[in-house]
Structure formats: C-alpha cells, structure tokens
Image (cartoon, rainbow, N blue to C red; front, side, top):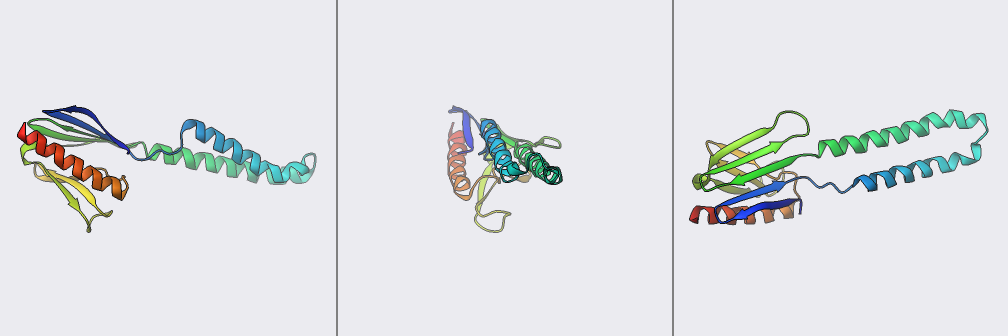
Length: 163
C-alpha cells in the first residue's frame, strides 16, 4: 500500500501517503536502454548509408520524448501527504511537486472522517472534516486502498478520542 503509519502510539499517530511509483531508477535505465536498442535495430542495416542520417533524428526525437515524458510523470507523482493525529490537534500537510505546501489543521475531538461513495472526483472519496473546512486525503490511491484507508483512519481517530 502506498501509505504507512510512521508513528503509532496510543496518544499520537502519523500517516504518510504517496502515489504509486512503479518505475524505479534501475527500471527506468533498463527500459530506456531496451527502447533505444529496439528503436535502432530496424535501421542497423542502414549503417554507412545516407538514409540512416535521414531516420536518425526521428529515432533520437522518439527516445528524447520518451525520456522527457517518463521523467515528467515521475516528478508530477512526487506528492507526499502527512497526517499527524495528536490528542488535541489533527494536521494534514500536502507537499506538492510544484507550488506551495498545503496545510490543514483541526481539533482531533471534532474531526470527522467521511467516505463519499459517489459525488466526489473519484469513487469512495475520503475527506477529513473539522476546523471549518473539509479536505481530501489520499485521492491518488486506488479505490480499494481508499476504502482500507477510511476504515484504518476512522479506527485511529476513535482510539485517539478515547485516550
């Protein structure tokens, strides 16, 4: 699951959430090398001819475009959400890849964890309500992960209220 409870004590909990990152740095290198070899293979028999120089810019443009697209996607998915639940205060901080960090804070006692089965941008949309605002959490997770997150988060908030 792309979230983990970092701190788990009776009176405090910290949750880190992030989007899936299925392509590792090693996987990126292997994929780019494989793509280069497969792209150059059909024109291998053209080495030493003028036709190679006509096709080479297009092959290099395809490789550069794929490189840029994969790197751009990796940068855009470097989101980190940190939810800190204490006995008095709940705080959600979202570290965006570009732009400012977003911050929300509310009283743990009045914190409500809501699951919107329909009506949100994604099915089974999880929100936190408190402090006069309602904020999303884990919108980048899959539907099953959002359902599991809702159950875990509801249980943790209930336990913190008892402590």
